[in-house]
Structures are given as structure tokens and as C-alpha cells.
Amino acid sequence: MPFLLIIGLQVACIVHLMRRGGNPIWVTALIFLPVVSAIAYFFVEILPGLGQNRHVRTARARAVAALDPERELRAARDALDLADTAANRLRAADALAGLGRHGEAVPLYRESIRMTAGEPDARTRGKLANSLYETGQGVEALALLNAIPEAVGQSERDNRILLRAKLLAHLGRKEDALELYADVVTRIPGEEARCRYAALLIEQGWDRKALVVLEEVEKRMQRMDRQQRAAEADMYRWAMEALAALRSKGVTE
Image (cartoon, rainbow, N blue to C red; front, side, top):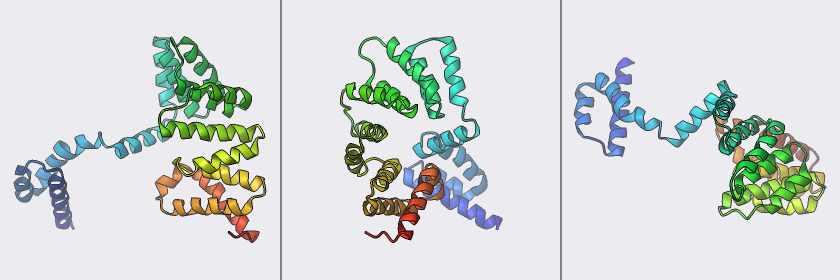
């Protein structure tokens, strides 16, 4: 078993080397000094690159957030204590919003906007609008969203469309919200838009349309691994329960 492990380690390092087009001297070392050279190769060639890998950085950030969810909030508050600036207030607001503490985030977003010279940042106003929505202040949130200049990037535009749909549904403008959901679900990543769209369709009596949307969620979920599904576990749980309920009623496309 140790022999097979060493061979596997050799092969993995050589494959990594060839893919990267690294220094061929490593090949000789890996063949004639497999254990020592493989360890050296890992620390010299592989480990430094892991810090630059987006997926590794994301996994590391999620692990830190799971183990110490208030770490960024503490750091943001420390920075704010040292310098009361618009940027530090924004950082603290973002940390609070990330923890779901939108009621505490709202005044910090307001203060950050007030302290910013010139035209307030559109993205910050969008964040304030979202926290206002989360705290039930839908009328103000929609007015603020309407006053923000149109976003340049498609991703930012779609995020605002999703927020607008949520606000319209919250304010009782269901048909307008359905129209926006139908548009944005075709582009925006994640399943929040689809699940909210399906929930509103069910509420309005459009069970067949909701079934189609939820079946798409089911298909997408089946193509994901456990870690990917865990990020939106509550959303997927609701979707599968709603889908099962529709099927038990005999709803078909």
C-alpha cells in the first residue's frame, strides 16, 4: 500500500508539472527521489498556487465563516473604532447584513451614504434598499430603488430586478412581481428567484406553471454535489416539499 501511494504521488506531481509546463528538472527528481521530491514539489509548486485559486479561496472563506461567523463583523467594528469613515461604516453594515442583522445595518448604510462626498454610490443605495426590504420597510425601499441610476453590468441589473420583484410582491403588486420573476429566473444564478416565483405562482393559483418552475429547480439540484446544495439548503427543502405537494394534488404540465 505505501508503495502504491508513493507511485500515485509521483504520477500526480508529474501530471501537475506537465500541465503547467514547469521546470523539467522536477521530473528527474520525482523519478529518482519520489518521496522527498514530491513533498518539496508540493510546498514549492502546488501550495503557493492554492492561495490564488478562486475555488480554494471560496472554500476557505466558507470554512472561516462557519467556524467564526462574526469574525468579519469584529474586524469591521475595530476598523470603525480606529477611523470613522464612510468606507468603514459600509464595511460594518455589510457584515451585519451578511449575518441577517438588517435592522442594525440600515443606520450604518444611511450614515455611509450621508458621509460620502458627491453622488452616493448606487451599489450602496441598493444594499440599503435590500436591508429596508428585509426589515419590512417596503415603500421606502422601492422609492429608493426607483431613484438609483440603471446599473451598467447585467449581474447588478438582475439583482435589482430580483429585489424589485420581491418588493412588489411584498406591497401586493403580484402581477407586476410575476412578470419580473418570469424574466429574471432565466439569467440570475442560484434558486432564490425560481423559488420565490414558484411560491407566488402557487399563491395566485397557477399550479401548473409553478410545477414547471419547481421541476427545473429539481433538475438543477440533482446536478449539484452536497456542498453546492448546502448553500441554499432551506430553499431546496421548501422547493422539494412544494413540488411533492403539487404532485400529490395530481398537478401535471
